[in-house]
Image (cartoon, rainbow, N blue to C red; front, top):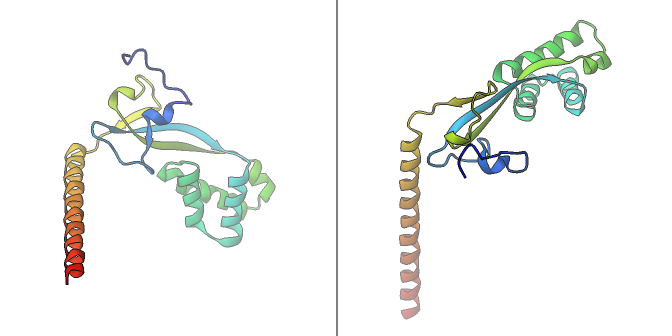
Length: 167
C-alpha cells in the first residue's frame, strides 16, 4: 500500500502516532505536533480548576490540569488559570466563570514516521530533534551492554552456586 492509499482513522490512529508521554521514539520516527484552537468550557475539569484556584490556592496544580489533561500550550496553561482567577477576584460568580468559555491552544505531541504526517494541514508540524538517530543507536548499544552484563552476572551466580554445592 503506498502513502496515497493510507487512511488513518480514529480506530487505527495509535498504530501510526505514538504519544511522546508514553512511548520512546523508534528509529526513523520524527516528533510531530498537532495544534488547534479550543475553548475551555463548562465541565468537571473547569469546576475542579475553580476549586483549586479559589479554595486551595493551588495555581501550579491548575496549570498542570491545563497542560496534562487539556493539552494546553505552555503559554495558555499559565494564561487561562490566571484569567479565571482574575474573573473570580473581579466579582464573577463561580457559575458565571463556569459558563464563560476561555480560548486556548491545544498542543499534542507524537512520534511517527515522516510519511504518516498529514500534508498541507496547518494543524500539524514536524519538530526537528537533533541527533535522534545517534541517540537511539547509542541507547540500543547501551541496552545490549546492560543485557550482556546481566547475563555475565547470572552466569557467575550459577558458578558460585555450583561451587557451593560441590563443597
